[in-house]
Image (tube, rainbow, N blue to C red; front, top):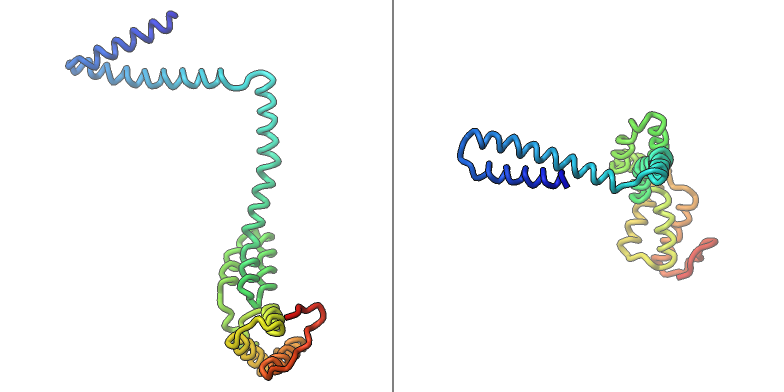
Length: 207
């Protein structure tokens, strides 16, 4: 009760200072405003502390926070770090990059070197493989040719897509980099163009 009376008296004095035009009263008013702000903050902190956990509940909350900080947070950080670290590999796979295996190896080496090689893997994944195309006749992975070949046998490709696939295979054959399975695909494309039936490979889909 005494504390409430003191607060009321303090507020009345602040009101009188606010109505006063004396410069000395204004300075005193500024000092009291600052004091009131600190007192109010201290009172709020005291009330918040009193309303929170205490005793055994406080110990239990502290144990839970310790478990979260020491176990859960490091696991989350490691998982997020790993997901970010393999992004170049995932991007290379989505872009059918012909050097996806090398990018994957660079990502793994970057883990050993503390992530220093990760920017190189990221740039490599987005770089158009011009030199690879000049050397091997294609700028996409062999898996892309196999996937497009399955779609061609199933009749799911348009004429311009078939023509592009045929040009890719011809360029690889001209440089001697056409593997046996893609040679068979090239023969199948000729049969598809002539309208002949093409047998599906083992495990292939039906049109």
